[in-house]
Length: 265
Image (cartoon, rainbow, N blue to C red; front, side, top):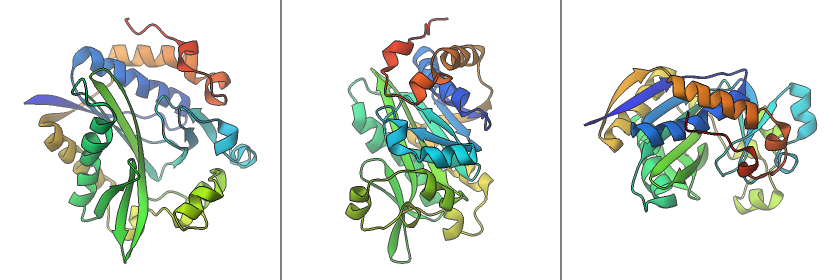
C-alpha cells in the first residue's frame, strides 16, 4: 500500500501565495509519485478559473469595497468566493497516462462525493464538476471542483461550503442571467447552501476525517500527516514572485507560458 501525504497548510491572508503553492504540489507529485491531500482556506478572496477574465466574473466595485483579493488559478472552471467558512481541499496524484478529464471528474471526484455520503448527506455530481446534495425534495450545490493534468499527473481541487457568507457570495460573483435561468433560479444564493444548514451538528473535524478516509480508500493509500517539503516551499515562492503576485496574471487572460518558472530545482 502506498502513502498519502496529508497537508494542513494554508495562508488565509495571502491567497496569491496559496495558489502558487497549489501549482507547486502538482510538480511535487510529478517528482515523488506520492499522492497529496491538502486542506486550506482563505479569509476573503475570489478565485477565478484559468480561462476567465476577472472583470467578467467579479463585481469589482464590491470586491474593492470589502477588500477581497482576486486570484486566477491554473485550473479551469468558474469563479468562486472563499471565506473562512469555506473549506478547500486538494487531491494530487499519479494516474493513468490516458486518463484525462475522465480520471479527474469520474474517478478522483468520487473521493469527495463519498466523503459527503459518509457524513450522511445524499451527494452526487451534476454538470461534470458540481457536487450537489439532495435535501427536502430539492437539490443544492455545496461544492465546485476544477482540475488539471499533465501526462500521468493529476490535481483536483474544490470548495466545500460549511458556513460561508452567502450574501457576500451572491454580491461579489457575476453570474449570467442565462446560466441562472437554465438552472431555474433567480440568484446565486438560492442555488448554493452551507452544509451546516443541512446538518447542524456537523463538525470541521468530522468533515476532514471523512475526506481523508474516503481518499485513502479510493487510492488504496495509507494517510499520514506531513509538512510542506523544501522543494514545494521554494517552488511556491518562485511561482508567487513570477506569476501569482502579478496583476497581469490575475486580472487579465494572459497565457501561463508568459510566466514560466524553472521547476527543476
